[in-house]
Length: 291
Image (cartoon, rainbow, N blue to C red; front, top):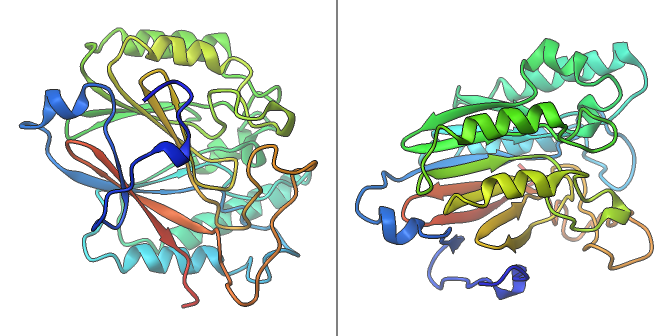
């Protein structure tokens, strides 16, 4: 796969519920030793959003929580990749929305739930309110032989990671070998998907350069409210759907406006993602159901 591979070029495997991806040398190097597990990615819940195009905005997140709670095999962990709430200039209302969001997701039966900010959560106050409820804006953790890195590319209102965090990332990566499995979570895409719509990270190329020496890197992000897949060299980037409204394909129309609600097909384009990590990464999109 080349650096310009996009979604239509990925192979959909018949007989499977999802799409499988091999990252770098991951499949060959770890075929015998990789323990299989799965996690769920939620993104762009925008709690507090009201009005069109989602007439069920107040309850969509609750339905998504119920969907994950009903999975036959509970995920090892759950991660929310930003825009937990919808932006507001009112600092008190921001905290009210964060509190209510936290109450709703506390109904998840899996208790290992991790969070990251989006620009709606953190750009107006550099993440101060977010940190009161959810802690660090960037962090790492390890799970069953995979190193996970959560990057903050939203609390800086200029859409940058920043030199301090890039230095932190470089120091973290120095502790790992070239063949280690690494999964990166961000909110915005690290590459320039469509900067005209704020679908980019100003210094994202620097993060990609730091990751490039590692053979087995996958990036999961949100922000663009749709499923999208992209390769930068051997690094795969996978965008998640939103839980509030879908957005059009990058540059497909003059303005970035939400796709209209379809009463005949409610929740179309909305959902969360199940990721199975084994000798490959298998992505299964979980739609929101009427419930």
